[in-house]
Image 1 (spheres, rainbow, N blue to C red):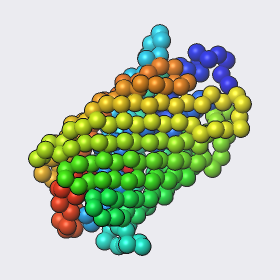
Image 2 (image 1 turned 135 degrees about the horizontal axis):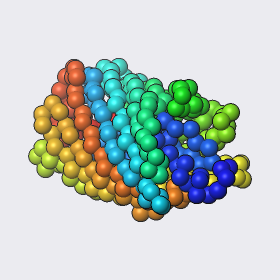
Image 3 (image 1 turned 180 degrees about the vertical axis):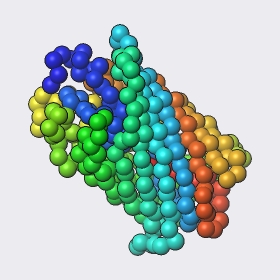
Length: 291
C-alpha cells in the first residue's frame, strides 16, 4: 500500500490504467477501459470486410484539491472474415491504446498501452437477436512508462438490432496471468458491463447509455477494490461510409477512485474495404463496432 489513502487516490491513474498505460500500485482498475464499447452492437456480426474504428475520450475525475484528467484513444482494426465458425461470423481484432494523463495537476504523461489481439465469433439468432463471444489477450508491455502483465480477455455480448433499435449488453472479463509485479503493483481480475439503448431515425441515432466496472474479489487483504457505474446519452450520425458518434457520461457511484468522473467520448467508424453489402442499415446500425 502507499503511505496514505490520499496518496493512493491521487495515484489513481486509474483512467490511464483502464487503457493499460500506467502501473497500478495500491489500487487498480480494468485493463479494458469501461464504456469503450458503449454505442456499438458487438453482439451482431459485421458484413465481411475491413473496418477502422477509433474511440477517443477525455475525462476528469473530481479528486481534491485538483482533478485527475486523462485522454484515451483506442484505434482498432476489425477484419470481419467471410469464414464461419459453428455458423457464426469469424472476426479478428487488433487494438492499440494510446493515452495521456495528468494526476492532481501534474505534468501529463503519455505513451502506448498494452496491445489487444482477439478473435470473435458472432451469431445471428433470428428475430433481431444476436450473440457473440470474444477471446483474446492484452499483450505484456514494458517501457519507461508502463510495465504490465499479460491479460486473458473474454467478452460476451447480446444485441437486439431490429426496427432501428440497438439494445446491447456487453460483458467484459479479464484475468491477469500474474497478479503481482516487481514494482509493487497488484492486478485483480475485473468485470465490466457496457449498456446501449439507442434508436435510429434516418441517419441520426440517439439514446441513453451506461457502463459499470468492478474489480473482482482478491485474496489480498490490503487491496482496495475499485468500482464505478456511469450513465449518459449518445448521439450519432451516418455520413455514408463514415459514422460518427458522441456521448457524455458521468459516474453516479464510485468506489476507491477518489471522486466521480465526467467523460466525453467521440467515435469514428470507417469501412476500409467492405466485401459486400449483405447487412442493411436496419440490421446493422452503421458498422459501429469497437473493442
